[in-house]
Figure 1: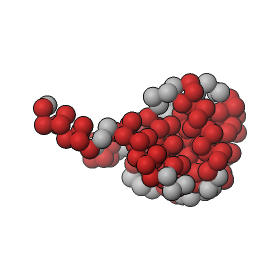
Figure 2: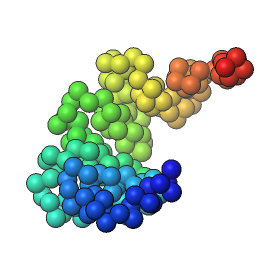
Figure 3: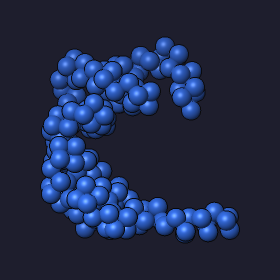
Figure 4: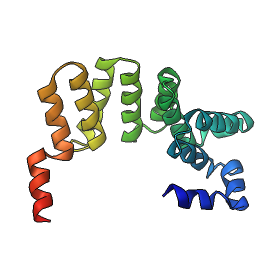
Length: 168
C-alpha cells in the first residue's frame, strides 16, 4: 500500500540508502512511478546517473526504471535507446525485449514492435507481456478478432472467468 510506503520513506536511513546506494536507487524511481510522479522519477534517476557516471554501465535496474518513467512521460525515443542498451547488455532477458517493443509501439513503429514481441514468443510462447503486446499490435492494425484472441490467451474469455469465479 502507498500508505506503508510513505511510512517507510519517513525513515532517514532508508531515504539515504535509496538516494546514494546504487543497489537501491531504482527504488527511488519506482516509488515516484507508483505515486504517478513521472517527471520526478526521470529527474531523480537522471540526477543519480549524472552524479555517478560509472553506474550507467552497471545499474541495469535503475536504467530500466528510467526507461519506464520516460515511457510514462511519452519520451519513447529516449526510452527506446535505454531499452535497446539494456537488451544488448542482457540479450536473454525477455523483459528488455518487451520494453523495446512497448517503446516502439509508443513511436508508432508497429512492424518492428510486432517483430520484437514475436522474438519473445519464440523463446516463451506463453509470455503474457508479449501476448498483450501482440494484442495491442493487432488492435492498432484494426484486427480486433486477432487482438481479442491474444488477450484471451492472457486473461481467458469472459465466460471462462465468470464460470471460474462462480465455482471458486
